[in-house]
Image (cartoon, rainbow over all chains, first blue to last red; front, side, top):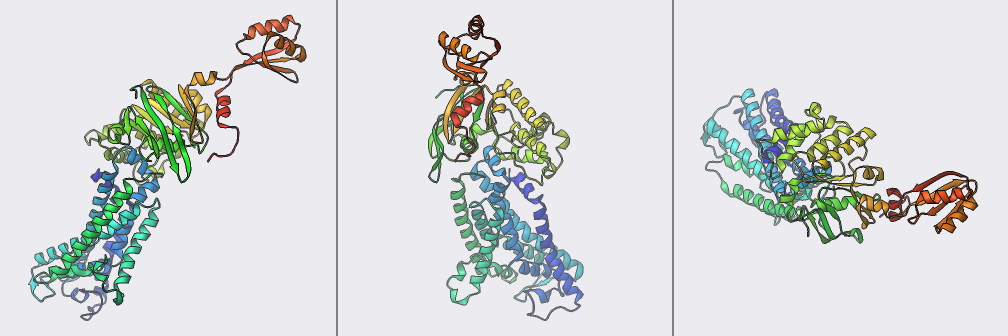
Length: 267
Length: 311
C-alpha cells in the first residue's frame, strides 16, 4: 500500500509542478550570479551566495537557504494538508476505509509518504543546485565555514547530508499538517492553516521580546544545517533541531491519530 | 444471533446534535435476499449504510455483518463486502485501471501477484476494458458509475451494499444496474439496496424494509408487504346506485359511490361471485376490476404523502 501511496502522490501534476519550482530556484540563483559576471561581495545576499563563483557546489546550499523559509514549507503544507482532507474531499476516503485499509494503517502510510516527500523535496533543491553549479561554475574542493578544506566528494556528501537534514527539519510541520488535515474535509483550508503555522513561527521568531519562546518554535533551528559545513561539525544546534522536530512530530502525529481513529466519516 | 442473516441490527441509533437520524433500527436481512432499503430523502438510509461499513460509529445499539460484530470485526468482514456509497469516488489523475489497483492495494488481501488479473476481470465485467487506461478525469458519468461497480467486484463478495446506485443515471444505466443486481443475486450474493425509487426496488427486490424519519416502519418479503392492504373491487356502471345496493346486500364493506364508479373492500369475497350477483340484479356492468394495493400505496401509507424532505 505504501508503494501505491507514493506513486499516487508523485504522479500528481500538482506535485510535479511543486518539484519543478524547487528545481528552478537554485538554477535561477546560479544563472543570475553567472550572468551578473561578478559574484556578490562577501556578506551580501543569502548565506553562501558569495562562494558560488569560486565553487559551483555552493549553489546547492544557497538553494536550500532560499527555499527553506518559504518554498519548502509551502510544498510540505500542500502535501501534508492534503493527506486526509484531500481523500475526504474526493470521497475516496470512504472507499479506502470500507476496503478496509484500517484507519491507523492509512495514517501511518500517509505519514511515511509525507516524510519521504520532505526529504525528496529538499534533495531536489540540493541536486538541482549541484547540477546548475557544476555546469555554470568551476567546482572543486570545498572550503568549510571554519576555513578547512574538504575534497569535492566529501563536500558533495556533506551537502547531500545537509539536504536530508533540511528534509528532517520539515517533519514537525508535516505532522502539524496531517493533524490539521484530520480536522476538516476541505484540503485547501488544511494547507493554508499549515502554511500559516510556519509563517506564524517565523514571525514570532523575529520578535525579540519572545526570546523565551524561540527555542521551542518549529522554525527556530531550521538554518542549523549550515553547521554541517563546519570542521569539526557543530552538532549542538543540529541536535536541538532534530530533537524539536521529533517532539513536534510525535505530539501532532498522536493528536492526528486520536482524532482520526474516532472520527465519523461523513464525506 | 443467527447465521442466516447477512445484516442484523438491534436498536441501532445515530444521534447528530439533538436529532436521532437513525432511531432504534432493527434490520434483518436474510442471506441470499435482495433487500430494498426504502425511504424518502433524509430518512437515514445513507447514515445506516455508513454505520454498517464502520465509517460512522453508532450512538447506541449493535450491528452484525455476515454474522460478525461491526466495527470490531471490520478487517475480517469488509473484504467480503462490496460497497457503493453516495456515488463512486476515484482519483481524477489516475486511469481507471490504476484506480482499481490503488484500491486493491489498500486492503488486507490485495496480493500484488494477482492484482492485475483481479482488476482486469472486474473491468471486463462492467464493460470498461476499452477505457481502462483513460484517466478517470475523462470518464463520463456512466463510466464513473461502472468503475464504481467494478470496484465492488474486485473479489467475490458475500454481501453488496449499494446506496442509491442509479442516482443520476440514464434509463439504460438503470437497466444495466438492475440486470447486474439480478446476476449477482443468482450467484448467491446478498444485495442490500437503498433507494427512494419504488419502481427500482419493486422490480428487483425479494425483501424490503421501509424507513421513515430514521425509524423502520415495515420489513419483510415483498409479497407480504404488498398483500398487507386489502384488495378493492371497482365496478364501472351506469346503474351505480343499484350496484351499490347489491354489494351492500352481499355484505361488502366500505362501499362508496363516485359518479359511475362503485368501489368496495373485497374482504375475501370472490370478484367473480360479485360479478354474477350484479348481472343477475340487472346491473349493466361496463367494467369490473380488483385493485391489489401496490407497493406504492403501502409506501405512501407508511411514510406519508408530503413533498417535504424529512429531517
